[in-house]
Amino acid sequence: DAGVTQSPTHLIKTRGQQVTLRCSPKSGHDTVSWYQQALGQGPQFIFQYYEEEERQRGNFPDRFSGHQFPNYSSELNVNALLLGDSALYLCASSFMTENTGELFFGEGSRLTVL
Amino acid sequence: AQRVTQPEKLLSVFKGAPVELKCNYSYSGSPELFWYVQYSRQRLQLLLRHISRESIKGFTADLNKGETSFHLKKPFAQEEDSAMYYCALRGGNTGKLIFGQGTTLQVKP
Image (cartoon, rainbow over all chains, first blue to last red; front, side, top):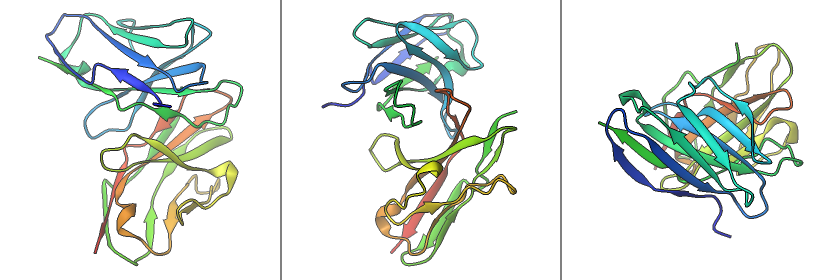
C-alpha cells in the first residue's frame, strides 16, 4: 500500500494562472481533505470531499475548488493565483464511518507562485 | 473562535531530559485533541489522541479542560524524538482539524 499519493511534488506558476493538484487516497479510504501549509505554519483546512461532494469548507475563497472522482481520488484547483497562494498543499485521507479523527497525509505538493 | 496555540517554535533538550510540548486551545464545546508528528523526510502522522488515553513511544498527553491545555510529555527524551510536533483540535463530529503552528523538538546527544 503506497499510502496517500500526491502529484506533482513541486510546481511553479505565475500570478493569475490556474493550477490543479491531484491526490489518491490510501487504499480503502473514501474521504479526502485538503490542507494548505504556509512556511512556518501549521496546516490549514481547505475542504473535505466525501461521496464526490464537498462536505465541509474552511475559510478559503471560491478561487479554491475541488472534485472527487468515483474512485475516491481528488483534485484541488486554484484559479487566479496570488503570490500568497505559495505553500505546501497537503492531501489527507480517512474512512468516513471510522470517524476517529486520524488523517493519513501525503507528502504534499509544493506550489510556488511568482 | 476555534484556535490552537503552541507557544514554542523550538524546544531543545538533552537526551534523557524530560520533555513537555505545550498546547493550548480555544473552543466553546467539547473538543477532541490530537498530537501529530512529522519526522525528518517523513509525512505528517498521528502520534496520539486524547480519547485513547494511550502512551505512544513514551509520550502521553492529558486534556485539561479547566486550563484548556493538552500538553505532550515524555519523561526521558531520545534522539529519535527529534521532529516537528503539531497539536490539533477537532470540534464536533466534523472532519476538520485545526492545527497549531507546530513546535520543533530537538534532542541533543
